[in-house]
Image (cartoon, rainbow, N blue to C red; front, side):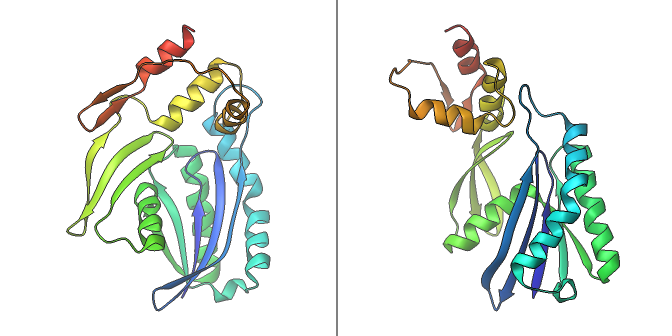
Length: 214
């Protein structure tokens, strides 16, 4: 069975094509195109416009890299939530267009659970403890009795949003993570900063405030 997946939850429009042969996953392609800004954070409407502009070309590139005909695709899946509404809409509309064109089943996918399931599938872990850090999400999650249970999480903002907020403060564009990582790799001075851990929960707002005071 060949599945085409579409990701459009925020700044990235991505298309992946996989083949599932009796539980063995073969990744044909995993392509993406990212909306970026020179300064400031993500603008949802502009990001959605970017997704609409790159969708068709990325789809054709995915077919070419996968070396398949679009009629070989059995299922169309797309990120349905959570995410930025304008961006989610573009991904859904593109997925619906393909599903109607190819007369294929359309499968909405929870973006967060997809992250976790990919990790669980690739590692073949059973009942794992997972650290989920993606954008607004920072959670310690356990998979047990066929359910995901949250043991701990951020009390204010996710680590990804924290990094981007700091990046905006020092004048970086979006996403700020790569630029911050590059600068950190050349850094020589370590700065002591406070951090908050409350049981299994964490908080980053105080850390960001302290950074702004340095």
